[in-house]
Image (cartoon, rainbow, N blue to C red; front, side):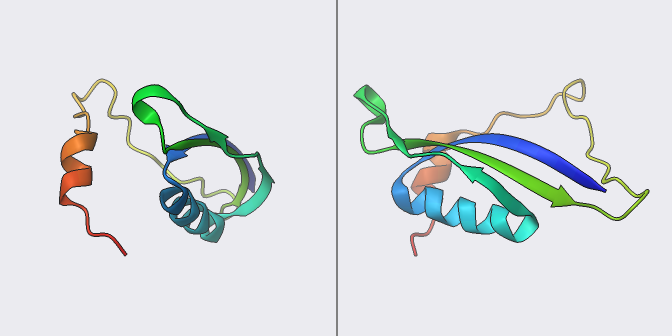
Length: 87
């Protein structure tokens, strides 16, 4: 069973490279759009459109927990960036 996914990624060039590599291991890249530079407070970051085709075991679709009604928490991106290790 093959499932399609469309994603908009936003980050620095190295962040986009890393996430694209990680997602490519999960599936086949069908289309990668051009990197579009962001402006203003997001200067130095880019937006990238990516389409993937992911194959799952036949009859065994992955179950993703629904956290929308369970009070899922938002990630504080500024704090996460301050704590991250750079490669």
